[in-house]
Image (cartoon, rainbow, N blue to C red):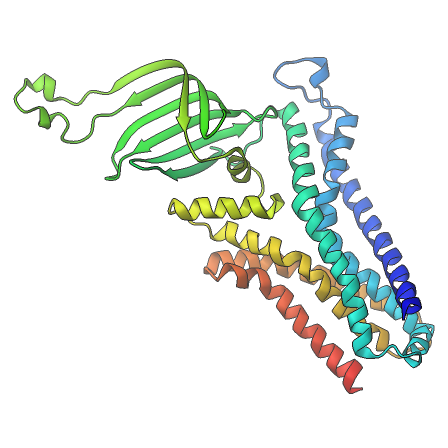
Length: 384
């Protein structure tokens, strides 16, 4: 059995590596072509060292490789395994393996063991390597575009504290991990605005504190404050806004740098634990977390799709053909992989629009393809 395992594992690993390299080369080419339009751009400092050059574009494209690898691993596993299984069946090698004691269930366990390896690899790439490299890529790009931002107004966050509620707007994040265009709106429990704080720049201080620079702060009187003074002139009863300018201001907050990064960067490119913490923050502050919950569960279930892919590939070893190439079967594997990738995204959007259970929207494509693979395995392998 060790000999059979070495044979199949060696063939499948080599095929998957070649397929993944082919896809990555294609994506690298497209990314590089897309980056050519940005060559020669200068930062606001107008310095020669801040010109976006070809070496920066190549480095940026290289930093996107782990994220592409994470997205392509299930498809590569499917195509590579189908190619090997179909080739073994075509050359009658798999028939010899069957007569040597490789039954259907043993073959399934054999491939599931290989699939488990790719599950761990996909999790490691998607949770550790891809988020770090993607963040480095965005910071590299921001060095020449001066900021990382999303939409026209940036990121909006909300936080409930002991006495008041806060709504925070961060327009952009710089490569030095500084925030630009910070606005903090403070409300009391009755929904009345208490104060506004604006600063062109802010940094994450020690502990749970933001350090704002060149601050403009306005404090608004609460309804009934003037009337509570009782007898007074009409001028005294008029509410007055207190405005002050401060060189620096510390604001205590539980909103961390990772939460701001999640709000500004794409959620599907964040680590699972960061998404989990951000979802908890949104729930604690009464905000809708449906989109981020779906992305969290997709991060949980997506590596498991490698197991589904090897299950889909096994029935190809039991197809009987003597002549002709295996290009048609490889093409079928490509179509199945692409359809899985598309369905995985479509179910996420539909689940967000229709307010499905997040785990169901994320797990539905995998469950559907697992049902198909088990049906094909039962009909083609066991029954026939």
